[in-house]
Each structure stands twice: as structure tokens, then as C-alpha cells.
Length: 507
Image (tube, rainbow, N blue to C red; front, side):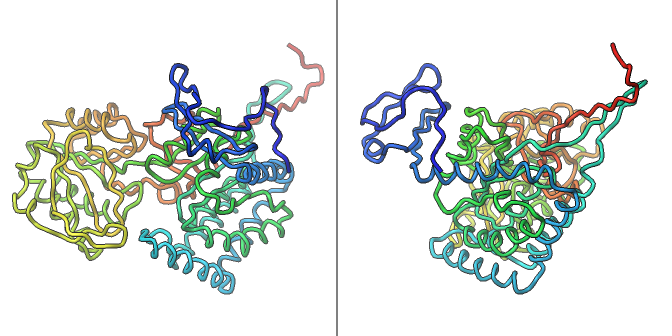
């Protein structure tokens, strides 16, 4: 299938070293010699309008991504016309296949190969490895989508007028593009958009590519066929590197772009989608923040800290602020709970302390040498070290060793100011017994998820009993008309249907 180039102007056939490329309205970048040599006719040059970075996408990758989106677009008519029973059947059969030991054995073998390759290059494999719990969660999620799909045809609301009525119905938005980190179970999460009659194209991180392909071939694709849905309803891109994600998130045919992961790569994808006019949902980054106020209960604070550090995911505690009047009492509690959480994982913990707050800790903690898991390898580091204010919001991407930041602040208002300025505007928790403090915190803090206990509640399945597609920071803007938990049920438009009983009705 040839690319349908409908944009005006002449095709870009070559690049020359030193060529000026404008960006951001009044800036320019220059083409490097390596890029100029690599660029061939049919390739694409994507210009990041935020910083001028030049991204090269080969013609073959463009074609593969284009065809996948075209297939998903073509499948929309069949998915829209399918009965609620057929959509529900797809999810049930998908779940049944994952629950079949012979099918699961094939998937497990593929996963073992992915895990072995990841270990060989020193990557963390915690979230890559399939476990019995992972299987149960995937099956449960699919059963949830099945039930949701079967009740999706009922009107959201109805308004009765004299002689006529209006019904509000959910309807599809189109094709959704997903870029996921190297976790195989996210393939199941993305299928949730089919419950609301959308189609999808996915790129899953290379670490999990063989597992994802096995799930697709042995369970997802046969389930689509049995339900009478086109195989292209869900397109899984092959291993093409990051350029496939760039091509996907700049194709204007997408109705929504969803990126899950962390760091600069996710932000780059968000920028590309936004500059292409594609609505985008970026998965929450930066971790959770917790403030302990003057009225904080020591017992509640201790429980919240320890239970928020059981594993590293996006809703794990990352930064803790304690007000000065409570520092002498609660800082030792915080250190003890960090150690307790680490001990559960067979580690000691790692602590970063804002410069100026170290006086509230035992000096011996800064001299104590501990083993810290870095990419599956133990490295010797100090248990505690200081960091500067500009790094207060830095996210610690730990795998085996719980790692957090601690700061002592003047008062609650000071803590909220720091949170609003340096946090990713994601998860904010206040440990305080004073209702007035809780009310102030909720009104002023700039975050979509606000609580008064542990931070790990922020999860679609746990909180809303719906499998999630992603969580969003407010650092990238506030979503319109929905929470920052994106679920398959939320990926819809609202269509109005008028029914006229009075044939003589007029205005």
C-alpha cells in the first residue's frame, strides 16, 4: 500500500548537511551530516516544535505504521455495526484462551525468551516477567470489559419533551494509538477501547515484543475471528524502534494518542501528538508526594509511608515533606518505615535529603554504605545523600531498592508551594487529623489525585473497578470532562438521537 501524500507542496527527497530547518515560529535547527547521509526518498523528517530536534523515520517504517492505521480505520465500520453480544463474546473468548493452560504455556515460553534477552543487556525484568497474578489480572480485566460492552448500548440519559425526546448515547471516537513500555499485559489493557467501539494500533516496547506477539497470535487474534471482527481491529506493530512511535503519534488519523511509560521519551511523544493536532494522554510520571502536617498522626503517617513503597510503579511514594514542628518526631519514623519497606524486598533502602534538611537526620546515615539495586546489579552507595532544590521532583526509577526524597518544610503552605512548583502535579497526599488543613490542601494543591492516606490507591482497577489505559498528570494540562484515570469506558464521544412522536412538531 502506497502512502497517500495529500499535503500540498513538493516531496522532500534529500537533506543536505547544514540545511536550516525552522521550528517554534522564530527558531531554526541545522541538519547534521549523519542525518543528511541517512535520509532517502520516501523517508520523513519530523521537526519537534518544542526544541527543534530532528527525527528521522524511514520509508519502510512509515509504510508499516500507515498500513496498520489504515487497517484499524477500515475495521471501524465492522466494530460499530457489531452487536453488543459479539463485542462481549470477543472479550470472553480472549479471556478463555488466556485461561487455557496450553495457550498460556506458549505465552510463557515467549516471555522467558524476552526476560532472558532483557537480562543479558542488564535491563530490569520485574514488570516484564509474567506471573500467575498477572494472568489472573488480565483475565479479570477482560471479563470486566465483556460486562461493560454488553450494557454499553443503553442510553446515558434521556430528556422527554412534549411530542419528542432526546437520547444521549456513547459512540466511538475512532482509532486509538498506543505506545507502551516493555510490559506484555498492556496489550490486554488497550483492548478495552473495543468495548466502546473503537479500534487500536499498538507499539509495545521491544523488551516485551515476543510475549506480546504470542498473546496476539494465540489469544487476541483468534478471539476477534470468533466474534466476527476484523483482525485489523487491533494492530500490533512489529519491532521497529522508536521511529515507529514517532510515525504513529504524528498520523492525524488517530482520534487519541496514549503513551505509557516515563521520562523524556514519553514527553517527546506527547509533544509530537500535540503539534500534530492529536488529543493525547500521557501516563503519570514523577511518582507521588506526601506531606505530614502538624496534626499528623504518627501511626497513620507510618502506615502511609510503608504501604506506599511496596513496589515501584507510577503511584509509588517518591517525595515526602514533613513540617518543622513534626520533624524531630516524624523524620525517624520515616527512615524506619523506608527501611521496613526495603526489608520486605530484601534491601536496605536509599534516601535523598533536600539540602538544609539533613540536620534532622542522624549523621551516621550519610556515612552508612548500602547495596542498591541498579538495573539488576548491586552497587555500593550511601544510605542517605543530599540533593539541591531543583532536583526535589526527580523521580527515582527503582526496581528492587525503595528510593525516596525527604524534605523538611516550614509549614503546610510552604509544602504546598513546593509541591505545586516541583512535583509532576500527579498524586498528592496530606497526613493530617485537622479537617481545616485537609480542606485547604484540597483547594490549593494542583493535582488530579488527592488523598489522606497511602498513595497506591491511584489505579483504575483498584479505585474504579475498571481496567485503566493510563493515568495523567496535570503538568500536561487538565483533561476535559473526565478524571485523570483513562479507562476504555471513557474513550467515547456522545451522540444525540431525537425521537419525534408528534408529526406536526415545529418551532
